[in-house]
Image (cartoon, rainbow, N blue to C red):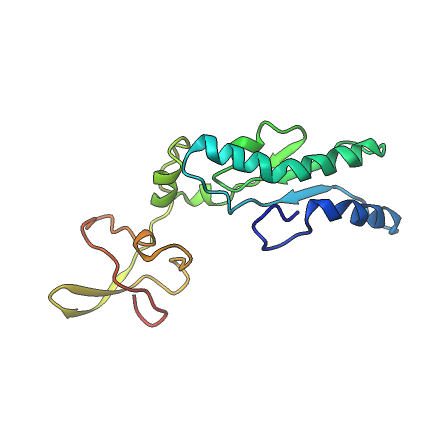
Length: 172
């Protein structure tokens, strides 16, 4: 289900028609729904909870519509790391948070109610010293995501006073 991240899935309001079609296909057995809400990252827990509930209203309506047709309440697999605690309260739901396994400083700061410890550290090597105020490191091209603001991508565990200046696929 596309619940607002706009990365994959069908919007819940159009999914009942797809469900009907699936029931006509030989060899296909409907097992449930999947909805990923990784875009819900409100800092305040109450705001995040309200945002999650609003995004999942159409999903819950779809589940009830399917149940109303005589099928069991569909299994729902849902939840990014910031919201999986909210989904634990839903009936017939399995949570699928992914990042909590590799909890990082950003999650620790923005989701304080989940007190996981850091589970992964990226080791980087110093490639060069361009001048007295800069170091050039190479942590690996895919190890640090570039989707967050630059100041939130790096935290130098043994040198927290250092701040990132730029990130590039050539050097960091």
